[in-house]
Amino acid sequence: LVRLPLAQRRRDELAGANTAGFISGYRGSPLGRYDIELWAQAELLKQHHIRFQPGINEDLAATAVWGSQYVGSVPGARYDGVFAIWYGKGPGVDRSGDAFKHANLAGASAWGGVLAIAGDDHAAKSSTTAHQSDFALIAAGIPVLYPSDVQDILDFGLHGIAISRYSGCWVGMK
Image (tube, rainbow, N blue to C red; front, side, top):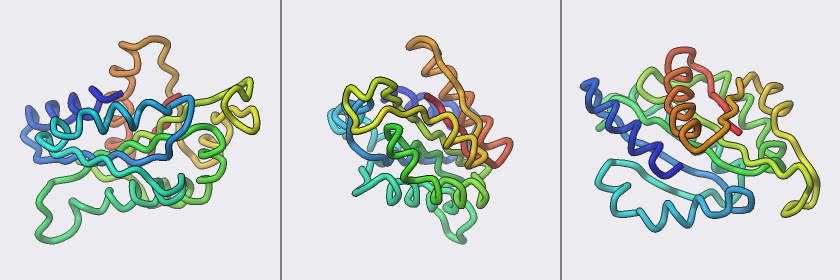
């Protein structure tokens, strides 16, 4: 998951686009190590114009990601667009439903794109309740991708951002 925004930035550079990346979410299992790995690579991310800003909660993280999609439309913007990743676990997807719906209706930009990564805990091993994010994402109009291995995470993540850019909607990945 840390390689994903770096790969997207390289793709955009090869396409002649000046983009940046933005990642925000809320700490916790099963994606609890994601933020730790992002912090460990802070200098590398900065060199590639990728900003990691953890959210105080899932809603604020989703709202920040939503705002990133306006960068290319602002006069004098330093970037053509900002691709963004939101991350959280199932209860965070439930909690952020309103922000997801409104952000998805507002759309993703052509040089931006949003990937919402949900980590589910079906057995409630690390959560207060068992959950499955598919239904909440679908209710917000967000299609969901299901990688089956590590390579799929990278491939589907890049495809998800491309789908988001093309369609203008957020794309989920579990």
